[in-house]
Amino acid sequence: MRNAEGQRVKGDTGSVTAETAVVLPALMLVLAILLWGLAVGSGQIALIDASRSGARMAARGDSFGDIRMAVRSSSSMVTGVSVKAEVDTIRVKVDGRVRAFGPLNRLLPEVKLHAETAAVREPGLATDGR
Image (cartoon, rainbow, N blue to C red; front, side, top):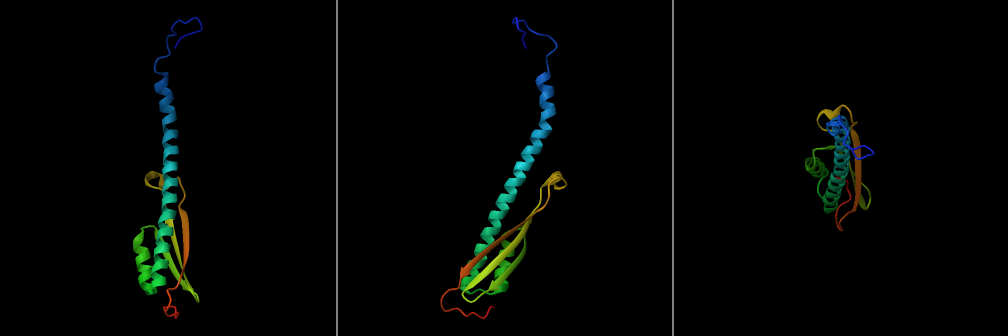
């Protein structure tokens, strides 16, 4: 570093290293929070995909037990599946949760996610609500 006259100032060596050492934990925390947010977003997308898959199966006439089993096996974050039959449509609701990873599990809260999809029954299928 130089002063106003352009002369080199002594005693300033290592300041960048010290500043980086102070800021690095904060940067790591921000990175971890961003990754956790990405995990929550991708978890929501996975639940939406699982509910759509279940609704397609229901529209084809698959049994509700098969639908629940297929949706639960589609993602590890699925915690609950409900299938509701209406007159012309079937609704599949999927619940799930995302937890932070590693030591951040204590710092960041668990997030509960939900996705619901409705599908119209295929023509000619029974409406007995299997």
